[in-house]
Length: 401
Image (cartoon, rainbow, N blue to C red):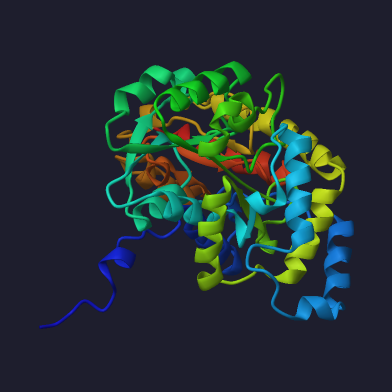
């Protein structure tokens, strides 16, 4: 009998659509094509100098040339606990913090620790591409709660209630959201948190974009809004977005002691400790002030307003105003099936491919985020490139008939 070369479990994992789009755009640029990429979700700013210097010093310290605790450097775990209290009002002990290899490992370990086969997770769609794969790997079942542009991509308690079954164990809560930029108000956060508490659910909350909110929007942690959830909430976060450190790969998971201990056991066998040099850099980041992110936020806000205005000027495109993160998520459903340069794209994936080929602009179709008919565009790129890229898209789509 011939057995499959790759396990069914791993064969079922999809490639990261956002990274795939970014890689294709970079390959085209390397071949000499003037591609502008809206795919990657990372700040276009360098990591602040004082953080880099902390890493340089760590390289010279023999202590960091050896294994350190799998759960993270003790001083970093304490600093993350202090930072969490400072930024969201959620008081935790250092022992409740697990330092991970980026936010993605924190996502995977949270679901691997909480889920048994068949357990259901409520996931608001559109959703970040990694959530489904992490849930699937853990044996869980994703249950989508679909939102759209008419509500600003915000889910209601009524929608969540409709999807609740006796197999539901976890609510995944994300605000600000990737890919939509949606931000729940403090009142909405509390309402959803109290609903989850009343239903006896665990809440996994991804707060990686906590400092990137704009206008009148306000970040609110569900762990703080509903203190009674303390024993059933897992907070995911990291330095990637706040401090422009996507490549340093430092994230963390905060939760009840038994969950953190179990997730640490998993990590001890999967990767052991996170790179000590990166942990030292993260220590400098979370221990410092937030002036670096304040400067980035000002630039992102300016770009956000420009992008949304330009997108909404394109016939057939509808883009709600995003109030967090650095993404816009316009609907292009009205353009599907129309003829553009001799082709009739029937899906947002086909339309994105056409835009890449004809306008040399890379963006991620909504299929990657569970809601076909949309695009995600990141505004974490220079002002000139942003304006040029959206102008190219507008010019091409204006030919639709």
